[in-house]
Length: 175
Image 1: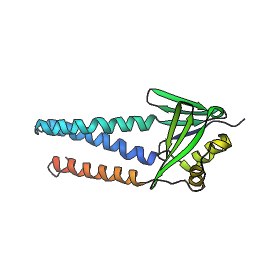
Image 2 (image 1 turned 60 degrees about the vertical axis):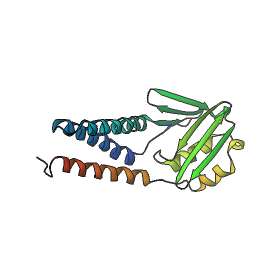
Image 3 (image 1 turned 90 degrees about the vertical axis):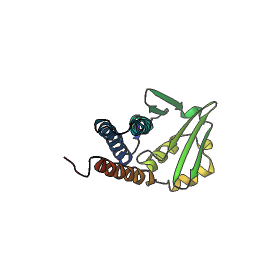
């Protein structure tokens, strides 16, 4: 019997996203402490909520593939599909972004290439799903699964920009 395989969101994305949340919170504290306009605090608060939500959702997301099926764990919830119940495995690909859709009657799961070691995830998954369920597009994508890095670069740029804003907010000095 094969052991379950675990796949989570890439650490290369989670690290800068976590730093972005931290820097946003520090900037909010600085804005409140130095008596900046309340509008700045509201804007930062409105920015912090979705970024924190994305970080929490990404940090808890995990796909587990075993002999029977796949389970995707998210923050405070999970969803499972049995391989025997699958009716279709399809792919949607836009530039370097790929989404695998696993369908079973009225239920479905969507996996993206945001997962670490996405090529291995695709290989393991396709080796266990029923042969007739896999679309031709999915077979073509599986031959060379795309690896996306622009989200990581964008996140690091946002961290650098926020660090610069924080530096300016502190009057161009660190202490």
